[in-house]
Length: 109
Figure 1: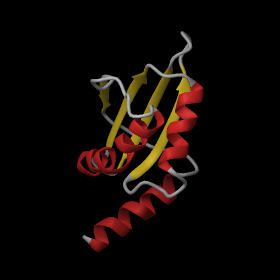
Figure 2: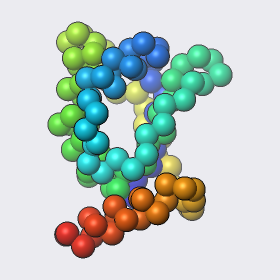
Figure 3: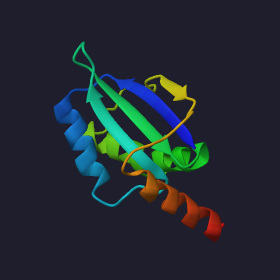
């Protein structure tokens, strides 16, 4: 499992455009994506993925192209800092769904 936070220098309007550009199709390997407003008004992503490699592929193939389109081809250079999180425990109503998905991946692999 791969989890991280990322503080992004965008507002909610641009975030919504990015989400629209990504589209409704689920992103392979993404188990959880939260976008929250920080106390200073900026946005923070909290993401959990099946693994780091699948996350990197999704950014290359789907997320970054959507961000580029949302910025009208003028996305700032560089990437906001990613802070990796060590997952010690996971609980909640969605956990059985996540475990089922992880089980399907390992059975197929």
